Image (cartoon, rainbow, N blue to C red):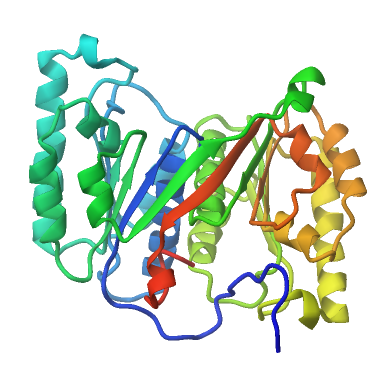
Length: 378
C-alpha cells in the first residue's frame, strides 16, 4: 500500500531503543526551552508508572538565575513534592539578557558552577535525562570551553539522554548531536495587520512540535498553581488515541492535585492514519475533538489551549479549515491557543499566527533506523 499524506506515530507497543541520544534545539524561533520542558514532563510521567528509580531527570538551567520566578516553577515544584525521586532542578546565572560586551566575573563563575553540576550528574549514573537548558548561548558567549563540553558529552553513559537548548549552538556540538532541530521564526503580516495576538503554531519536519506544546502547557499549569484563578489549561490531542503516552501520568498527577487548573483530552484511533487509510471513525473522532476545542476557545474559561496535532488532522481532511479560522478570529483576547503538527499544505489559519516556529530537521536519529524512546519521544 502506498501511504499518502501525513501519518502520526502513536504510542502502540513497538521496539524501543536503550541507547541515549544527544538532542540539540537551537534557532531564533520560539520553542527550544519549551521542548526541553516537554521532555521533562514525559520523563516524569514515565517514572510515575515505573516502580524503579531509573527515570530521574535533572533540569539544569543556565542564564536563568534563581532570583527570578518562571511560569513553570509551580508545576515543577508540585511534581517534586509528589515525586521527589524523579526530578531535580538547578538554576545558574543572571536572570537577564546580556551580550558579549557585558560579561562579568559573576557570569563566568555561575557558568562554571552549572557545568560542575552537569559533569557530576552525567558521571553519576543517577539520571536517565539531563537537560542543559540554554547551554548553547553559554558556549557561544565563551563562558565555557566548547571542547570540554563536547568531550564530556561524547563520553556520557550509554543510556543517558542529553537535551541541549538555546540559540547559536556551536558547530562542534552540532557535529556530535544525534538530533538537531532548528526553530525558525515565520512572519505573518495578516496577524499584525489585524492586531491578532495569542496564536502560536509549531510545524515542520523536525522534532520538537508536540514536545514544545507540552512544555508550554507545563508553564501555563505552573502559572495557574502559582497564581490561583489566573489561568486554566486545556490540552486537546488529535490522532493520538489509545494509551501509552508517558506525559499522561504526569498530567493526571497535576490534575489530581489541581483539578481547577488543567483538563486533558485525547481523540483518535490507536493507529497511524494515512490519507488512503482513513476510516469513518477517524472523522468522528476528529469532529469530537474539535467540538471540545471549539467550546473551550469560545468559553473564555481557558487562558491556554493546546491543540496538539491539529495541523495534520486538517491536512488529512478530517476537519474543515473555515470553522477553525472563525473560532480563532472570535477567541477572547486573553486566551492563547497553541497549534502543532506537520502539514504538507499550510491551512489559512496560519495567517493568524502571532508566533510561528518552523521546526527544521537537520538531524534525527529515527532517520538512521534508531528506535524512538518512551519518556522522551512519546
